[in-house]
Image (cartoon, rainbow, N blue to C red; front, top):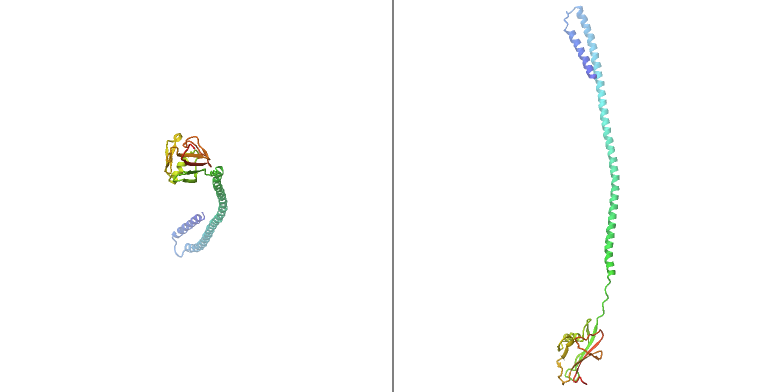
Length: 249
């Protein structure tokens, strides 16, 4: 606004001066002298006004420069304040970060504890199963003894007293067939189960030494009352086969 007013004042002054110069005056006349005096006075006033105008313009420019400087300083202060606020925010974020890490560490610790608990449970389970299912004690082997002799023949001792493993339900014939097979001793049997009859052992046959000769069997020193194919034996018993020349004696 000040510049506009100054420019308007300058225009009016230039117009007045221009109009004054356009008037025709004879030289040497009183009007000319008056005009020259007025012009000098006018020039002085003009110079004074121009000086004042320049001074005003310089003051205005200085004020504008001050304003611009103030604005720049204010903007710089605002920038500095914003910059100074940024580290605080970073500090706040940095202070919040450990909280998150601590919570994560807590969660990780809890997970690791749970994993350890599960692994310990898994380790303990086999022990419980072992305790629930103890090993069965090994049963002692069941055995019997067997002897085969033929007195008064060319092969009196066919099989000396020998221990043989047995199974539940084995009969005298089962034990005999098992041992002669293992020792590769000849044996001939007719019939089966209740009708089983031993005809020869070790190549010594019935009636080979007379009409009443043949094989007879004893269990714990007692003769049996039924076929060897159905006569069961017990662990620890003693079986003895003996060839006799006369079973009637």
